[in-house]
Length: 320
Image (tube, rainbow, N blue to C red):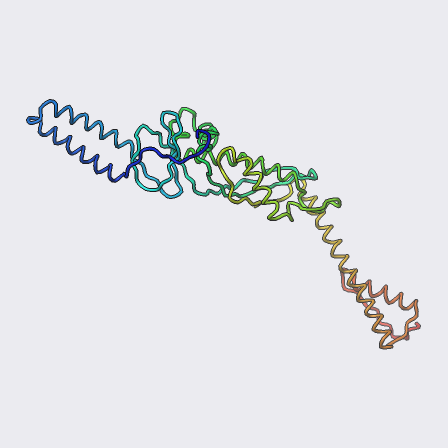
């Protein structure tokens, strides 16, 4: 059981009980010092030993809040993970490494990557992660080095990698680095959008939940070795890189104009057809093929023009 997390099953005593016993021991020791004339040298020695023992007992107290844990290490050997909340006393020789099991947010700043078609894009994500396996988190990755990298603290600092804040900062730095790698991998599997004529299937813009699910799977694969799990991962920034953003914007505008023109022409043709049908059905006027062609041309010009048409009023008959 030395290669995975397991529950600490060593000696643990209610902290308040041990605190009361420790105070009682200190009181006895003080009484022995005061009653020196009665107890003699042996009493003083017992009192001194009692004071040392009481100080030794103080090193064994610890408290845990909900969603916190302590990895218990006895002279370099992992003895289990303590997760029970409350105030306890354990063997003072145990190194009680405190960890947080609470969910944490990480906002990964946008990075430049190439999509499936080779276009440079800026993409970022936000994720929620937490510790799942305290053994792997503590002993499978070098949290000391990671903490120094994240905080810039020199290696000879005693606080780096030893405090819970230092360890969690180190884990967060590990998650950030792996998130960048997973984000590059997922972004390279999809095109930015379907503006390319030969692009079919999911894109980064249209993929939505499926792209986020794929990103979450890739992240969990990379973080499993460190005992961490991603609860949720979502893209929160997606744009073309600055060097091609202007060109791609003009391309999108052109595509939008073409789509709008198609709708206008389709509607205009439908309206011309309806006009000719109504004129024929209600026998308002009889038009030959030449007049129909002229009418169709004029209606299409009026309906498809960007600007309002300037009508010319025919004051004669239809044959003029």
